[in-house]
Length: 275
Image (cartoon, rainbow, N blue to C red):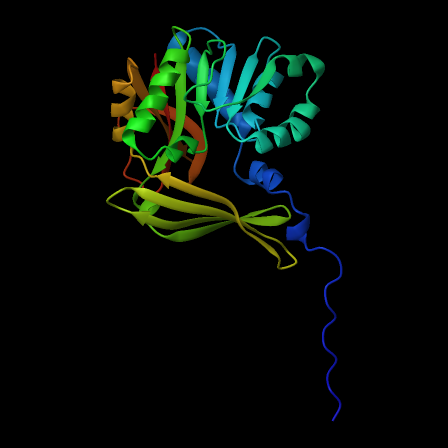
């Protein structure tokens, strides 16, 4: 009997091997255009002036800071992260696309966000739930106090937060993008400590995968906890901007200041604190 010929081995690198995780992250997770637009809108709504100086904490690739200096020639930005390698990636891939004028108005700073020194910003932003890295209350309070001290006299502190019953479940959520599938995995939640572990994976049309491209070892903080800690840190007030829904009940990416939120199984909001 003749044997069937075995399938030939794949030649060349897989799509996963060729992929850049930072590019995939920016394409699937971030929307810095909408984020910067929201910062300007909410700041003007609360302060009746236009913000100029923005500090992006836990900035990663500094995408939001780059967008900030792009949209207005008066804008200045500081992008702060403790990881020198990811800052260098941002320098090579994002800052390199800016004009000379825009580059001169943006500074990358490799430092701990709790001790960094910059000119007083109108806005400090900690996005993509990055501050959840601080899992102890006293440590998060130290960070909030540092931000309070760093801000301009009428400055605002912006945080994003998510919650709802689905936030506590172990699950995977897949989203198709052009050329790849983004997979968000909530691996585990421990209710006594609030310890929360999540991953981002990427899948490609050739069947290859980037498993655990990003790992998050967080604490799942609630809105009431965060507002209490902001108050203790010295902030005069905090406001919740809740994401709206379209006609089909799906999130529409538009945020409105509210006093009460809906008990949705999954929600996203911005928390804005006034110095």
